[in-house]
Length: 213
Ligand SMILES: *[C@@H]1O[C@H](CO)[C@@H](O)[C@H](O)[C@H]1NC(C)=O
Ligand SMILES: *[C@@H]1O[C@H](CO)[C@@H](O)[C@H](O)[C@H]1NC(C)=O
Image 1: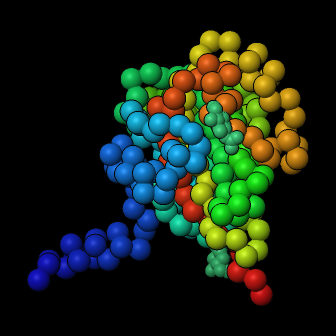
Image 2: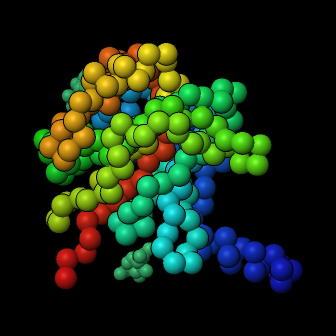
């Protein structure tokens, strides 16, 4: 028998969503979901990218564990980003894509760009791992919107070290940020063209279409 206080602790931890604690777990989740093959990137993370969704009302924010399934309505607001284990304080680039549009089986519109931002720096001494950006996002956050009848889509977040000259390069490479121009994007081609190299961290989630009524 566990002491009562411990049982209560376990009961609470069972209902909250777990969080990744090391890059090995994240790498394994990427491999299990074939993320690297899909987005044409080797994935060898050096740091943990924590993506946290604020919730409405009094619900606690949800931090992704790589490969977690989330209800769509938990992913509507712009997430906040933390980086754990980095020697660099920035700048970083964060990108998010859906490689499964309209369906994972026939992703003819993929990838869809769901976020792209640069000039992210690690935070102050009170919140040392929190990223904040000193310039507006290049491509504002778009909530997941998998079409009815589709299997769940993967939504992949990637963190890159930002090279000098990125602002000019990204302005040249991403000229529009409307709904049509975010489809048929290619994050690895973008990364190559913008000199980003390979991601230093990342995570992903699955989101299913809203249940039809
Ligand atoms: C999401 O929808 C479910 C089912 O309708 C509901 O129980 C839950 O409270 C909603 N969550 C949020 C964050 O709105
Ligand atoms: C994306 O670009 C890479 C080159 O960086 C290429 O190998 C791959 O086929 C492209 N993917 C799609 C879906 O066009």
